[in-house]
Image 1 (tube, rainbow, N blue to C red):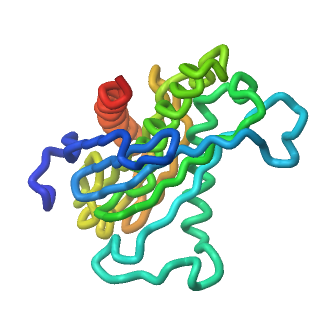
Image 2 (image 1 turned 30 degrees about the horizontal axis):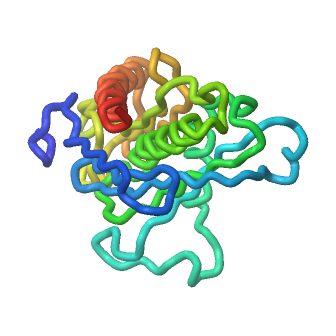
Amino acid sequence: MRPSGRAPDEMRAIEIQTGFTKHAEGSCLIGFGDTRVLCTASIEERVPPWLRGKGSGWVTGEYSMLPRATHTRGSREAARGKQSGRTQEIQRLIGRSLRAVCDLEKLGERQITLDCDVIQADGGTRTASISGAWVALRIAVNKLMEAGALKEDPITAKVAAISCGIYQGNPVLDLDYNEDSSADADANFVLIEGGQIAEVQATAEGATYDEEGLLRLLRLANIGCDAIFAAQDKATK
């Protein structure tokens, strides 16, 4: 039995509230159970110096966790003067995941930054960030297309992410904090609509697993991402 009482292949409730902030070109508040992440997309009519004059755009991500997003207050990374290795890793993951479904040449010489700020954490903050960032990106690109700034849609597909793990010997979908903190193994899957895999991060924590165990987690991830794709589609329409 899972601590939440959910079935092994049961997701937490997914909530996506678009237009959550006033100024960003695209924004949403995404919730997976008690995890809440604010995702915003900001468009800049410039690119990093190494891309200037090459006719290509750039999509990147930034990630942070608010001080009281968890059970105890964590200090702000800005106050410490540097980002943690975890934050930097997640930021790179968000950027790679979104670029996997973007034709950067069609975007033109502009940059879109996806800011993902965790306001409440209960497991799966990086996966919620990726899934919500796609919604914010979709809204921002829609505005560019409506304004005539883009001739073709640079977004090629939906991308979503979900955590899976082996908890008390059983593969389970969408880990919350109680499961994640004591799982034998956990994995984050970034999947593209249509069956492609963008990235897999899988780690044996308390016990190793075999090939069939990994495949069972992938099957669960497909179930979860299909539900996220449907929620993304509903939110952006």
